[in-house]
Length: 406
Image 1 (spheres, rainbow, N blue to C red):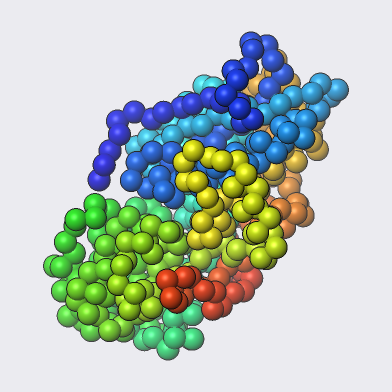
Image 2 (spheres, rainbow, N blue to C red; image 1 turned 60 degrees about the vertical axis):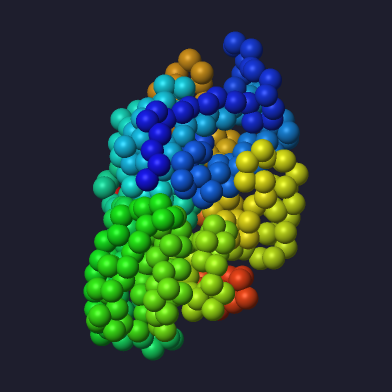
């Protein structure tokens, strides 16, 4: 995999390129995630979702706390989607003086970053990292604006067994914290339902020239009805193309939100192969009117990268937008920013974010559970004529989700 050795941290005023003068009344909020690297096609639209919120908040006049008006300053810390860079980028956000962070994007990167933030009482809200471990470690500063993999894996397993009628499946993951986690949730639930996991394989993230022939031969020797992929589109598209097109596998290919990307549909070029791909997506996209309005506002920003919020990544651009506004809403409630007491401001804001209840965002209404998780919605999509079409959707059953408590 392509690797960059140093994380990059950029500080920019969200409304433009003009540098802030020293002593200006600003509140810094981190925007941490995948700005560069092979998975930046996933990360950049999420980062941009936060930027839409930054820009709108500043255009509306910023925020008044205890009679003082402040504008918001974006601190972008690039973790490149690399687990080793998670704590590096997190420390750069800390050193830049942020009071809270939206990020990170991938579970494996987010996990080590949480410890860095916890040491200084910085609340972080991840818009897309879904591994259940993140909110089960007893850290009171970790929140997310998207549901957990404990739900996504269970939902797809139930759908595969009850609706698709599958009884034998092979499960492959990309060996990341995210990929292995969601694949394990699926495998555990499918087994409980009475299904059989014919093969459980790990396929580390590779580039687009990787030959999965040996792995595919092993998997297909067990004659599964479907192959389930837990991982990102970077490797998943190559695996799907080889499995469904080159090997002419006549079963189904199932995956999770990691392959809900434009790149996946572009890279799997065989349209007949695409027609058997089913994806469990968390979160469920909101109504068409909300999506259309946000898409227009996103496009109006004229971002230099990822110039357009694809329908496939919109849910996470929007949970990122919501995460920033949850932080702003908590600041308004607690009136707890004091530039001369950054440590106290961080802790007071963290405590107020934890009390968030009934906040109406774009994607859903947010109430944080004691774990830092949220109740939410999710959907199943199928690729039809090159488009992902929703074929099932529901609310989360918390009893099934086994949401941990702090």
